[in-house]
Image (cartoon, rainbow, N blue to C red):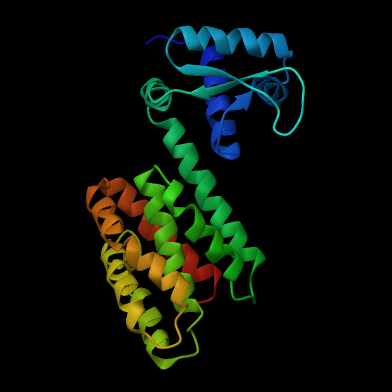
Length: 232
């Protein structure tokens, strides 16, 4: 499918806003994000709809009377088409954004127990559609549960073991996959967190097995960055 640079820009921004709001987006929000007139955004989104890349729906404001609003969502093939057209740049951008967001949260929470970030990671796991981002969240959450046990001798030995696997080694990824299972047996571990991690352990391993070599390198480097930021 051929799309002009302008059409790709609108579709990409709609995808970003759809993920950010976790639902359909009003065309005025797209217009504001791209600094164009609402009518321009509306017409472009209708054009993308005619190509099967966007879906439109009408909705009335919740709890209020008023005019119905036209909301837009990307279709299932929108992200796939964008990835094909940009050579995977969209997926790369998603990865960089997700990684930077986690590392910023870790930096901001230094000296804390990271419980807020851990809760956020656990809550969004069911919504992760990207195997790479799902595995990244699982890895981060598992490390943070062990971080909470950092003063215990067993946890200290585990972190020493993880540091032996520098990038681009992949063994660390499978080590953490196994460690997430063993957490359920660790006394004083966060029970809610370990329960969630255990419920996703099989999905975690399957996603990890299906990642490309390049994605595994990215993740092993990411683990090293996490350990560095939290001082372990």
